[in-house]
Length: 73
Image 1 (cartoon, helix red, strand yellow):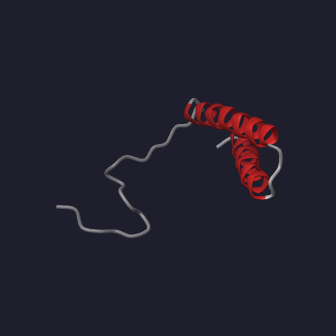
Image 2: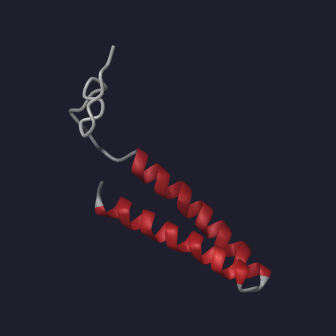
Image 3: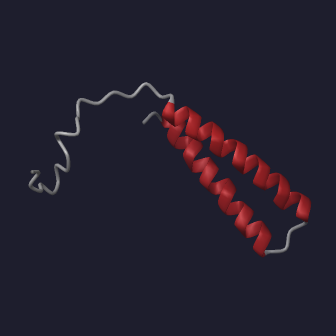
């Protein structure tokens, strides 16, 4: 994953945790509301960036679990 995707994921997590802290600490409703909106938009942007990333792997479903081999019928 590129560093931009990881940075977006980290910032999104922090913003959404901040919403929880704001709501528990009885911040004004407008702060909680706009932090929630910002977090949701940031979440959509983050998912879009991660899914549209140019990532290629040579693994297939035949590789299955490499760390714990289990028999396949």
